[in-house]
Image (cartoon, rainbow, N blue to C red; front, top):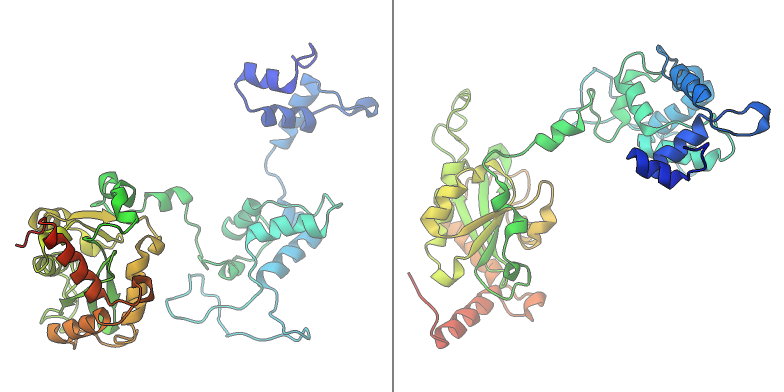
Length: 374
């Protein structure tokens, strides 16, 4: 078709391919005889078969200068403003990912994509100094696919010793969450905060798996705290696999605590509850039946979708700092802290307190004759 004078887009349309694919094929596999680029099918087939031949020497294995550049950007020494090296923690390579709250190896720690793109800036006219980020990943994780040492994977952001396929990460999710209860299905009235009765919820975790639950009303910022005491058997012996949640914040305990708090509210304040995808909400269907509250879940790793609740959790950390045992507080003490927050004036409410804002909404509803109490 090229010899017949058809253009790139017309060829692509007839073959059912993207124009960029056709253009790349014509450019990459063109014959160079006579100093003129001309596409010939026989030459293109020969080039394709030659490029597909295996085993093929990896670019990082044969290009010493390129390999040194990549290694320097991955694991290069951290220096100060004068170029003097700053030694970090001494972390020996053990072939496994770093543990939680453990020291990590210091280095420049560029990502493979940053290295790949920066090569085009530092060597604009040197075609030999080119490599894709995927080739760097394979050189780190696949044996025999390049000259990079395996321990350099500790300099990646995740620090994984083994690569996790992206398809597997996309399959991660909670089985109790269906598309019908995702945040995108939430009514539009929730987003503009014009109608009260829509809540956001979360957990605050402390020492020894202690926890309290938080409920925040979106329109008024009114806060309620859930008392989640641990069971008597918590910490007494070895944990039983698939046994009850002894720490006190399992799905059943959280469901009962939310239902008890919601029951103290007028009916017009029981519209919806938005939570993250924590396993403590596995019984959300039963909670919805018991309370009549619609339950919605945020997208994974999207705390900004519950911004009001996240902000309130930050305020609560003044009373319940990280690393402290919060199971020692009684329900009476939690209610006192919630009342303290609800009595604090807020700029977003025009310097009214959440309690005053909530009372105004309830009073207005009663005057209009639409309020109903349980």
